[in-house]
Image 1: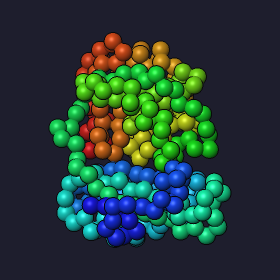
Image 2: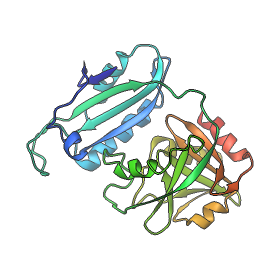
Image 3: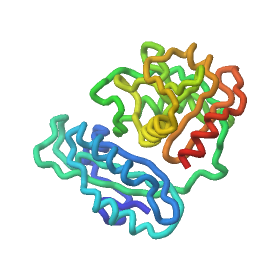
Image 4: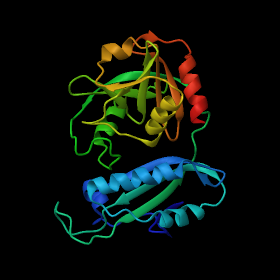
Length: 260
């Protein structure tokens, strides 16, 4: 099902700024037994990202009305908010009304717990104004994910222009080294998602020392454990990356349990 501003539809206007310029934001999460998981966090991040771009985010009640139309089921929900329909040109018109899109797709079959990852050739550019935001301009991720078609490789790891580890093409990255949880700094690029926020909060609640900073690929390769998270896959431990194998990790298993 696809809802556009609360009505069933399958197309948007060619004048919508989300289509023309990627002028909008989105969220993707699991819907289980009629419940949108971690909805409060998802809407808070959606609203925050809209505010960062100067888009008037539709009220939370409108999205709840949309989600109730899906009934009881299990699937993936994607929400998109665009700045709306406007005239040609980059300058947004004043008083524009945002468009909201809510759509569903099947949940992944046979969810994975352990994966093989690769290092992507593409490097993420620096743009602090957009760092952390899940905006619609995702060409870097599209190009990075297009680098391989081997079904045995589940994810690609992205570095920035300076060679710092940032994230996966569709996931947030963490690694353990010497008993400490490491989280890449996302002040210049990358997406700061809901599951990343949850991992950091869960770590603090459980007394796990966390280090956030700029980490080179050498430090990642020397990690004791590496795991990836997003709101659809949950948690994947990286068991093989660039010719190195890792044992099944105790901390990855703990965080999977805590997240669930």
